Image (cartoon, rainbow, N blue to C red; front, side):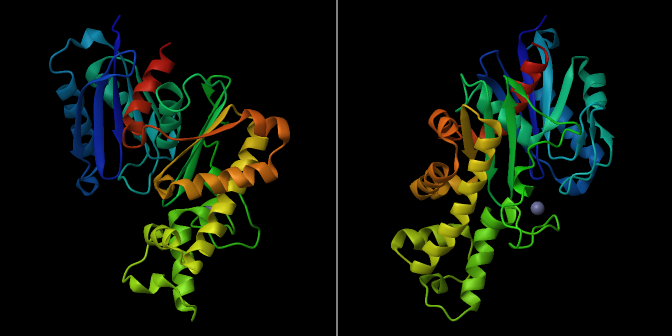
Length: 313
Ligand SMILES: [Zn+2]
């Protein structure tokens, strides 16, 4: 039986495919544009040709399995991509399609779970047994490794950490609820808070920008702007409180934090650690490490490889 794996990171803008060995070392890789507007058949054709490309110099018998990470919602049991917001699929059987073409086992999971698997197997979480992954960018997502295995929940939607409530009266979330973690702490939330501040008469160096995003808020906070600091302080307190909740629920060895928000640097991790000290139970706090995600841009593809590996173990 083969010893190599193929991972496919299917995203709304690009498809990242790689061939790797058992240690997760990438032997060959290719990135192509998704061009989601061209329809599902074109995308599947691009996935197939990307896989053919990374297999060019090797025999298909050397491949043990193929893993695919895709935006959800998915029907993992049946191998379907249900209806993601940024891809034109509707209950599309991607697993069957790829399996029929290459005649090797094919596994599918959502992008948050594969990123979790990547950090567990190859990144910050190596040597942990219980690991929570939280990614905060424009949205907030996550995954959990419990007792060495990915935890998917009854409908494979577990760890929707971005839509746990952190303030019952807080800002409205994209999901319709109020005060979700995503609505209070994401890059989008920081941007909204900055726009609200600019709409008031408050004095702030954020006014110097024509377009404002979380990035500018971080820059101006670093320079000492009071308003920018208040915005970050509030958003990061909520993030720290949310992460403390996850620590108290799961009692993990490690919580790995990824996504654009970690680009904010020391202030982000200081704030999370402050909140953890205030809110976590002692034994949980003393055991649980907080680490920055290591893989980021490669988390999707390495996670798809980790998925193929762990499912065939
Ligand atoms: Zn929500």
